[in-house]
Every structure is written in structure tokens, then in C-alpha cells.
Image (cartoon, rainbow, N blue to C red; front, side, top):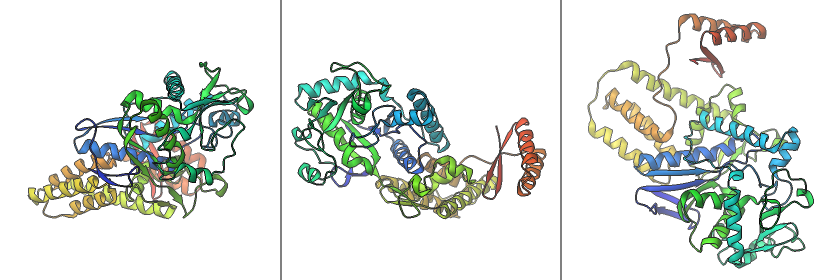
Length: 462
């Protein structure tokens, strides 16, 4: 398998440390708010990578962290902790905030048919490991103490900037960070923050050899990555926004502790744009998965939308684009349903079947070319030389990577439920909301749930 390695800026043949076993760490969410669809693109990418490796007969060990403390509003260690800020916003305990949004995130993963990683460790449950790393950094001469916390001295790490390709002096020349009184370099980052200044009343804090405080954001990924995957592992994934700060810092602190290479292959997905620009709440174009569902689309419509573009290319989200993906996915499901219904053995070409399998394998082995993989899927469905069973067999194989639930057949919905649903749809169109809600409740009592979509509604058994 060929993967693009951000560290070397080229495609390389994946050679895992252990034969046929790949260890992956994916940067997970900071659980202070609803994940937006740009965040979710990163998790669809990481899931597709994991699925592709399994398809290619690798054993996958996958870690995705949950950041529930330490991520300050600015990635450069400035401002308030995101968890504390959310707690004030919603007038709740930060632990309540963390668990609530972690549950929302996990529900989003389920809806998008993203497989649960082997481990999803929380930062707050690995404080001891983070403290031990900081102690080792002190011992190795990389850490120093100031009045407001403990910092990593980037000038001590010879290769700082190797991931982004930007030398330390260039980063410092363009830095927007003011050097605090006791901070040695603008790019130095926090390993541990003390309960002083704006962090004086920080609710989430722990004892340490240097006093009460909480960890910096970057240290958790190094500590948990090495705990579950070892001092050096195969692949680290994340969005390209992590390259210049978070991932650069992960490398510096990890290699500062062990003296060994931290990660062999760094893989980054590109940005999701909205209407050709940046997504932001102030522009009114900040979308969550729930916003997509509320418009009548499914989570798998969005997954299909993402798979149609290469993970390293920018992807522009528009409602028209999502509608087009919905139409394509719906058409695909209908074609597959026809294959289920026909059950006619027409072609018998095993050679053709093998051809598509090889083409599909070649596509996903070429740095996860999912758009080409989808094209091969469509081609196999249209091939008259294949029997229905051969086509369905191929679809089943391909969907191990695509994760689009393509083999789920439509359920037979009883005529009584269908009639109630049609009646409810009529009430809804006439804006008779009370009658519509009563019919929804009645359908629910009978063991079915109804979901409004762009073309009308869908019904499924609960």
C-alpha cells in the first residue's frame, strides 16, 4: 500500500514495524461542543484508512483520544481552556460538559458507520502518564519552569519544524505570539499549567511534583499514543490544521523523551470548505451532522459525499453538492436492491469478478483513492458479464472499505404502517402539525420510526 507521508512529502510504500500489523493514532475531538462536519470528515478518513488496511489483510490497532481538558482556546497555549469556557457558557460542571459532548460524538460516529477504534482514552484518565513524560523531559533538558507553568524549550530540539518544513527561525520570524516574561522562545509550548492568572479558578486540576495544575493540550497525545502503541508506531492521522503546531509539538516532546522516531507515517486530510470559504458560526454556515439530518439527508449521504473526493484534496460543501451525493447514493442503493430482487444468474465470468477486485484493491492501495474505488463499484454493477451473485459478492467486499451499508435490504413495511405514514405526510404538507405528531406517535407505538427526508419520508422498524 502506498501512502502520502507528510513528513517526507511523498508517497511511500507502507512498511509496518510489525509484519502485517499496523498501529494507528488518530487525533480525536475536544469534547466542549458539537463536532462540525469538517471535524467529521477527518474521522471518516481515519475510519476508511483503518477499513482499507483490514481489507488488505493487515491487523489494525487503532487509538483515538478524547480531549476533555487542557485544550486552550488558542492552539498556541493562549486564552481559556475550552472545557472551562463551555462549562461557563452552559452553566454546568466541565466533567458534565465533557461526557455529554463525548456521547454526542460517539453517536455521530455510529450514525456515520465509523467503526469504534480499539481504544478511545480520555486525557483526564491519563494524567499520571503525562506527568511522567514531563518529568523525563526535565531530566533530558527539554523542560523549564515559569511562574504560570512548565514549558518545552523548542530550541533544544534540533529537528523542530521537520513536519511542517518550516525552520524554527522562520517560524519565530513570522510568529504572532508575544514572548511572556519567562518564556524563552515564541514557539515554546506548555506541558503543564499552574492555577494562576486566568487559570486560577480552573476546576479540573491535579497534584504534580510542581504543584496543582493541569496538562497542556499536546502532551496527552504523546502519552496515550506511546502507552497503547509503543514508543514508535506506524501511522498518525489528523487534519492539516494540526501540522504546524499540535503535531510538530507531539514529535518534539515524544522524541525528546525517548530519543527515538515517534511516528513513521503522518497522514493528514485537507480542509472542508463551505460554499467555497471558511466555515464559521459568524458566517452562519457552521454545520453539524444534526443540521444535515434536519434537512432530510442521512449521515451516510454525507459519508458518500466525502468518499467522492480524495482525503488530501479540499472538499467544498454545499447543500446542492450534498443533494447530488444523496441522489447518487440513493441510486446506488436502488441498483443493489434490484440485484437482490432479480436473483437471476446471467453472466458467469469469474475473470471479470477478479478484475474488479484487483482494480478496487489497486485504488485503495494508491493512497486511499476512494473516488476511483467508487467508480469501480459502479462499473461492476453495470457489467452484464457478471451474475447477480457475483455482483453482490463484489459489493459486499467493497463495502468493507466504503462503509456505506450497501448490503442492507429494504424492510417490508406493513401496509397499515405505510398508510399511516402517507396520511402523516399529507398532514405535514398541509402544516397540520398536531395531527402529524399524533400519527408519528401512533407509528412509533406500533414499533416503527418515521424519518422525514428530501423526497418525503423513510420508515424502519425500531
